[in-house]
Image 1 (cartoon, one colour):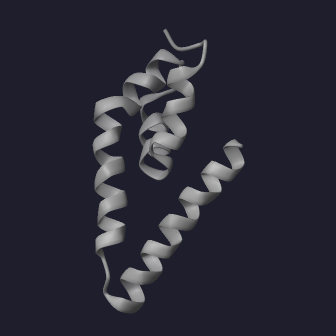
Image 2: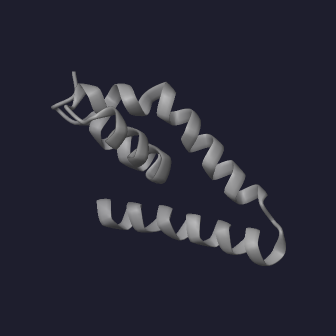
Image 3: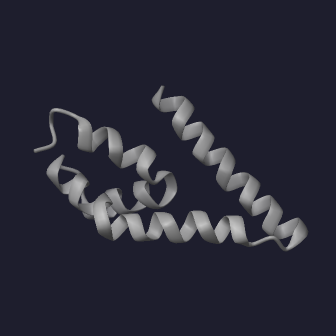
Length: 80
């Protein structure tokens, strides 16, 4: 299931970049980027630290995958 979720996010990024480059429709890219960027500081780093993941890795994973990355960690038994 994790593979499917990650794949959907990657496809959303690719589509948003395609729309931005070919049609000037930058809104989709901006929405994904800004929402994931905010998630880095609101929940991504904190969840990563609780699960022994570095700040850098947590930031990159949250920026790329958003809640698809941190939500399973937050719900896992490892998280406190």
